[in-house]
Image (tube, rainbow, N blue to C red; front, side):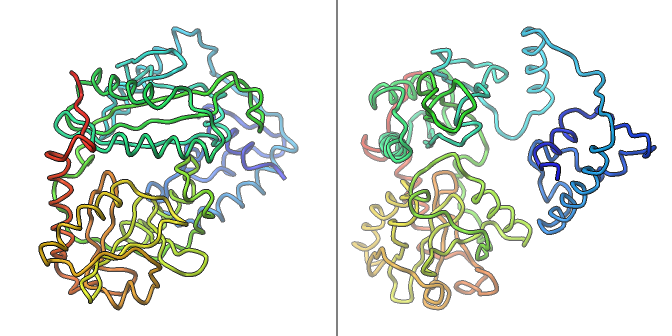
Amino acid sequence: MASFSSLITLISQNPKILLTNSNHSNCSKAIPHGFSSLGFGFGVSQHGRSFKQMRRIVTSSIIQSEALVGNSSIQTFDIPVLTSSDAVERLKANRENHKGNQQMLAMYSSIFGGITTDPAAMVIPIDDHMVHRGHGVFDTAVIVEGYLYGLDQHVNRIIRSAGMAKITPAFDKQTLRRILIQTASASKCRNGCLKYWLSVGGGDFELSPSGCNRPTFYAVVFQDDECPSFSFSKGIKVITSSIPIKPPQFATTKSVNYLPNVLSKMEAEEEGAFAGIWLDNEGFVAEGPNMNVAFVTKQNELLMPNFDKILSGCTANRILSLAEGLVSEGKLGGIRVGNVSVEEGKKNTTEMMLIGSFILVLPVIQWDDHIIGNGAEEGSIAQALFNLIIEDMKFGPPSVRVPIPY
């Protein structure tokens, strides 16, 4: 049978690919309408189809194309061979023609050993093992009013993730830190986001990194109206995800292998929800696709799942620290981190929330068919925690706020 990857190449590499066959006058009928975008990652919302429908389409197309490809001559036309300058111009044109909500302002690459502010140049080599093997880790930080928030906590985590992924960082911690601060400075961004990656590097397309030249490091600063969100959001709906959760060894490492996370998010969106909630292998509440989960119990405790099988969120840990103030004020009766059953999460709680670097604190008012709280308004503790994290971002101690020298 023709492989999925070979079929994707045939269909999506170029819209002017032509299939000819002496016994089939119109082979293009084998390719479903809208299927050509698969090579770049199809979206259910784009095509209006569910995962099951797309799976049937893919299977049917593979069967049809197997018969066609086996008896046909395949010719390609109008695919130019570009010079390097032509390729650069097309990269620039592509950026100009496909501007999204996020504006990339600066990128550091250890490949060229510097910072660029040209979005067209913000690329990484195809032979980097982070690209074709997923052998890379990443982390984030937000820029708030000219300060990097939580930088050291996030840098410490990416170094831990690199160790778990057997990646030797391209630089030591202080050098990584300086590069990130200088990249933020070059971007001139005062409110935005910083993402950065450590990779085992490039050099070949093998599975083993033994042939890689050297580890690589990349960082990008971008602006997004929702990164971070400074407005307390209305309550959202979540569902229990049917996508298998990563095993603890991989769930606790912030690697670039995010396919389960993406599929979980897409599944939720298909159901009209914001995100899916994962359960661990024992059935306890784990985490969302890129955020932690927290509850307020009927005993007025702030409750979070254990971090031993999931990613230890920097924002979640900061929230746990800031929540001590609510305990001192009598607004919370206590703070607990432990196993959370689905029954407890749904029936013994007055509030539920998602916590992450970009969403900060996002209240949940419905989980599957179960209403959290009264289902009509966001909880007071979620609001208080949101206010605390915003205040911390703007006025917190030097341990969480690093000034950017513009």
